[in-house]
Length: 209
Image (cartoon, rainbow, N blue to C red; front, side, top):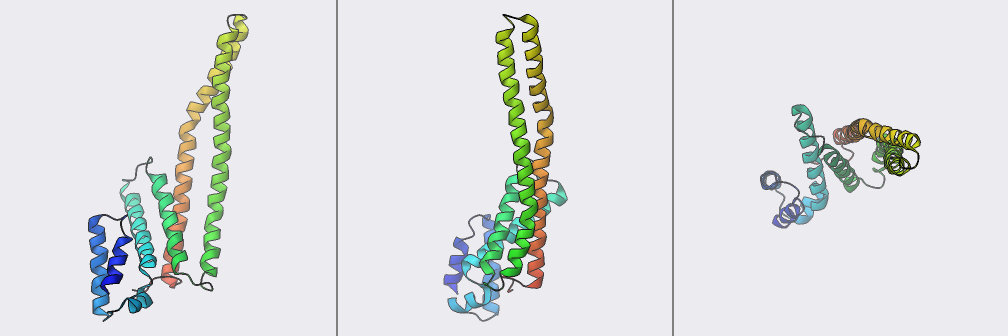
């Protein structure tokens, strides 16, 4: 049993020391109360330490995300990274416990959740290309206008005006693009969290305690 707990702890380094202690104390007490003394019996009951650790990490990541949503403590600069991490941990947890046959339903549901992510990603890439085009056009036209103005004043002013307009549009629309990206990723993260909770309730994977 101690080997199982020690191995579990080695896979929980992403958690804080306090969180690790809570997890280790919980599962140590659980195994002791269940009379489980061997590594093999612990694996049969809880899955391998790697599997259990992935589920624990997903649980903590979801809990942290939901807490930040409720309190409004999650900053937009950190939110996308946390959401992507939560999505990844959920996928790992689901795939870790699912058997080849039992994987069918989770795989279908994951695919359904991936569809909006793919759509959002495509939209983000398209908009990003548009924004990059605006930025490059603005910079190039401003440079060209600065050169032309010495040979043809009004033509140079016109080119400079178009260049500054393109650059202004880029700066004006950039916050909107950032908002759409951040909230799009957050929406996908919430879909994956609902999927994870649904599979947990239906016992399609890993919830053995």
